[in-house]
Image 1 (tube, rainbow, N blue to C red):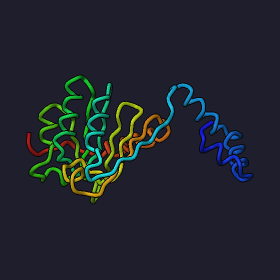
Image 2: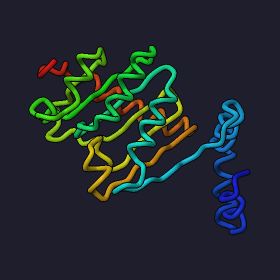
Image 3: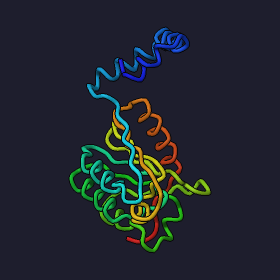
Image 4: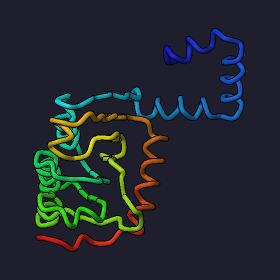
Length: 191
């Protein structure tokens, strides 16, 4: 049983909550999912400026074996784009959905990604497609305020969460990704 759950059990109200979760099968299902994966859920938090966010994102992309899905508002980071291209070159299926403003960006990375064979889509169904999410394989989520830019790493006050082995959370992010992909269109500029 996780430490934080043990601490909550000491209060009477928490015992009732835990009993309710067990009664409805929610606690048991979570325990079974953890046993199947053999991995403990983990969340790492990083901050910028100069907090290693870009390096961590690049490292996580480097671990990808099957798929990298990205939703981005601004995408000008050369190291992150290079990591995606490297993943694509080693057979990882990579896909980026970006805000429509990226088609007008002079220094954006989307034309490079598309030229290298990465599927690039534009979400123009919202005033701003402000998601900043990466879904790597079926176990890693990277999210937070961090735009995929040099300024986000070096100048801005930003953050990322690296969430691993939370299958229920991953599925919610994946469902959201699929909803945006369904109305996105092909990127038109550059290449």
